[in-house]
Image (cartoon, rainbow, N blue to C red; front, side):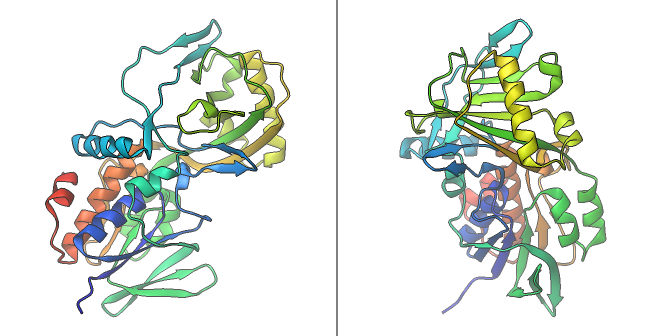
Length: 344
């Protein structure tokens, strides 16, 4: 029996899963490694008892024709749905609804469902990999405890840019390019209330002139399709500058400060039943690579992520798809028509 080349994908977010899917379709045997308890990256969903929050990426939009067709099929299946909530800007003069524009989509019943919907379904291990090592013509990866995994015929690095740099040490020129990418952090706050809040919106970009520029986004997470309607949940994202200035503080200290800022900008005087803060060290790409992926000129090692093309979920998907297609070609795999066209 003939088996395809063995490939490891480091990072189980959308870019990594998209790369894994492209490689699997081309005939590779793919294993996805993620340091989290499950795949998803910023698409992960936080749970606390019966409550849940999309505390990272809030929604996504689609412009690429091939991805639009894929999303339409997934909407029909029920794993993705348009979020028709009232979204606009919250400023000193109050809330101003947006003028529509692109449709906003979310995973159902949570954003983390996007990983399965758009990804490969490859096995994900709860392990943090630190180093790629060459062993003859093969490659192995080593975790923080020194355990080796492999050998592999190819490797895709799909982690946040700062974590990708040491993994690309075999080709310093690639590591240097990735190191030049800039990513801003974000403190997120998850709130739950026992009763609905009387606010005229479901999502709002916060004007920097409001609340001292502390907050960037607030959303009624429970307004998204497929979410439990018997409880009111909100997500608050702090502004990048404020998040960076307070990045190393404890979550227990950050949570009451962000909750107070939420109350101040909304005028809501209600005590939350739940209040949880989460630190995203690598949240928003502010200076991207400027191309879909990188590939080692001498070894079957590549890198991709939302930091390549920008911070959009669509960008992460297209980056991973292009990376998977390029590595498949490097490994001599025959690409399907769908894989080839999706990478263009």
